[in-house]
Image (tube, rainbow, N blue to C red; front, side):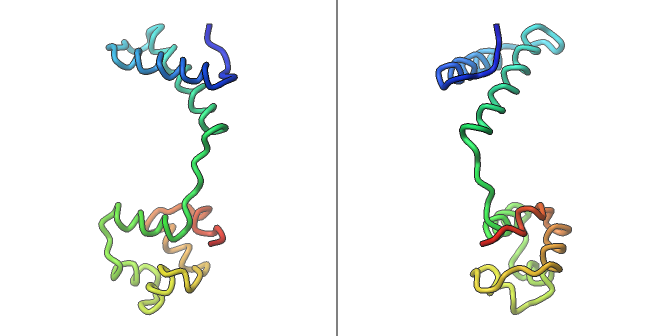
Length: 119
């Protein structure tokens, strides 16, 4: 019987079962697909509580998104609206202002909750 994960041993057991199910050709809307979905939800919830992933700093998020989107630092200057401020911001010497946060959110699709964090 499947129930909430209460310890690491149970977590590891559920992971092993998920792996086994994923190695088979699970038919949609089958008992196995329902089991896989349920186990995945339980494992995700357990991981969110016991192994949380910290949010990146605003600067880490900007650098990652630039690399991911293939955007140059010159283009970042245009997004920020201040050519001279780009290096100050990326070095951490200057903080993002509200208009910069809005433009980064709009152009790079970085969540505002990441950009407004203290750094």
